[in-house]
Length: 162
Ligand code: ADP
Image (cartoon, rainbow, N blue to C red; front, side, top):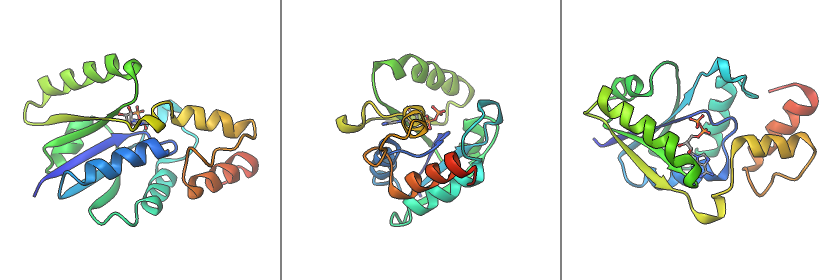
């Protein structure tokens, strides 16, 4: 069985992430979307909230599973019995960091390959932090995130709930 893991913060998931999820899921038997429990990044949504949202927005994708993890991505990839780590590349600005990480991971785990999917052009500019900033100032984020995310952000920002 061909498995891949797509790790990230997903705080929150955007149409850009969903594009990468949909396209990479089509390449493998099982795709595990792995939500990093990154307490040091001071996320808007807790890891559990991010998982809940991701499960909702991927429920039509039969071979996609959503889990949380902490620690090294490659350790989680191994734990899942996967051989591939998926990352998305938006613009040239992602490249340096992603290349550095992929090369480091390759030294630590030569049995795991990183697969990069370049984003569809319409989502090339999208980032979770921009979405949060626009939402914070009351802007319309419906073109950037699914309705479930929009609802969750509004609830969180204006009522402090998840
Ligand atoms: P991280 O904190 O690990 O960068 P993110 O949730 O921001 O987590 O991103 C996870 C992965 O998704 C990264 O590989 C990132 O480059 C990619 N990604 C983020 N936004 C987009 C987008 N709009 N289009 C394609 N890939 C994206």
